Image 1 (cartoon, rainbow, N blue to C red):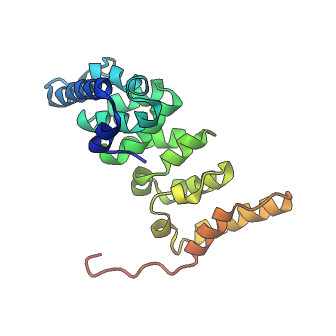
Image 2 (cartoon, rainbow, N blue to C red; image 1 turned 45 degrees about the vertical axis):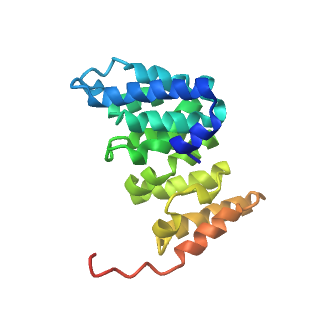
Length: 212
């Protein structure tokens, strides 16, 4: 779970807090510059270098939260987000995925989510099915993301808005039943999360509101 700046400050020592102050100041400065990274896709602003070393200065347990704060403070453009994801370690990629829903990128960052869902790294898969995916993945891709979680052992509870999107989804129900049948035929256990997701599909879709 990502932690706030206040929560981080309570745990970090003086040197780490000073480093974070400087890093966030650099990110904020980048956000107000007239010439952004979008205009120069191969230039890495100083805060991006801080992003890579967050674990070293603030501790591995705080790295996701620190990196997320940097992305938000910099109002990271697509060029920065893509560069940090493509050139980053698995941990650095995870932080990008965890923060996408808090950046103003629309659907432009979907290729990063799709890339993570092709991986077998459960840390990336779990991060990829967060709020950004729930808001922007089309139904076909979202259903396959749910199956990816079941296939790789990622708890379905990691899927943001699972109850909302699975509710009344007959096609997802069919895919889940087919997956369960394949597992059973192969003598393998059916993940408990599959039954959870399947039960959600059997609920009637929510009635539209007057505003919808």
